[in-house]
Length: 454
Image (cartoon, rainbow, N blue to C red; front, side, top):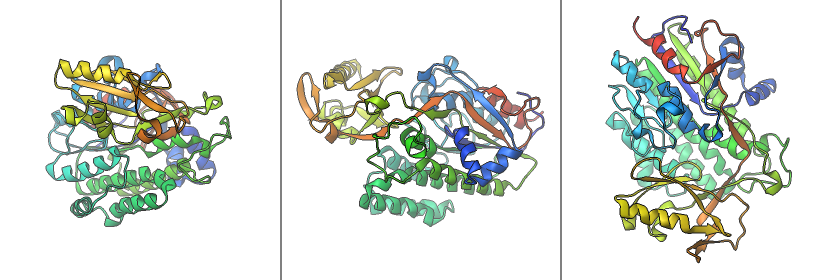
């Protein structure tokens, strides 16, 4: 990927897993005016990454984008594993030549050796810390809401911390209270809970816009994830084609269309960020999706592929003897995933024995992986439709009712594909025709070459 010119500033908008066919369809319906303009006037390319499906995950692909290394080279397989990364991320490399960065929400990332700038970790980060110090209360507040899937445990103290953080970063108070209002609304009407994902993205976008206006860094990222969530969960409400009409969602209203709603919100964010830049010829805007999704209909004849998430990770872990009460650390992650950290070999053996013994209907409850020392990565393996009388058993004894312990958070409707989307505000990559394919890993060197001193 050759650079056609040098820039003083690059803004990389990481719109996780956005899918071109949906954008194209909504443009035709005149729903996305800003996407329409940029798709017509900007350079559009497609990115390629991994071929094996288990490696087409955002927490793998974004590490590739940020390091220029394939999975085989960087080896980061799980969300939260960035602390074992041995390669330099793009903001670290830019820092070596005196360029500061403002990183807002980038997935599976860490500040590491980068000097100055700002770093706001993704809300699932286990080891990464916000920088500078004044950002930490805001990140901790957002992270706690996301990791708990935004249950209604929002106290007065949380509200006051949020208000103080908003005032400090010039974020409209109305944006913060939209989160509080959304939590209140979904308590009264649980079927509007799906909107919370986009509310968090809007909040993070407000933080980003303020930092963009107030700082003079050379490189910026903004990571947004709601659309990825909506496509995985609610594609059948966007398009019925290929889906079993008898399978319906219990967690949204029949006429809700989260996907179209989410793309409309992203379109508005794009317009606002482009307006801040105001066609500055020395600023390059990159919009990258990392990967994308296509409809998933493979298990429609079996009631769909159901994703289950623990309602209370800490309580469940304590109940089975591997929680904080027994000296373990428990970390909820995205979707159906979580981790525990053990202190010694004895704890490790105990945890593995317990986790492997858990069953439902004679099938294993969890998939278990050990990719990082001292951590066990856990994923809910059971995906069939659960009945009210299904029990979780440990060594043959019932310990709880499955549906009292787990929430059905999705009937899978969107499926990852390794082809991603890339738009550039200038013809910044020479010698490429529209929709030509480039490697996602090439973004790393391209960004450095476009920004670094000659």
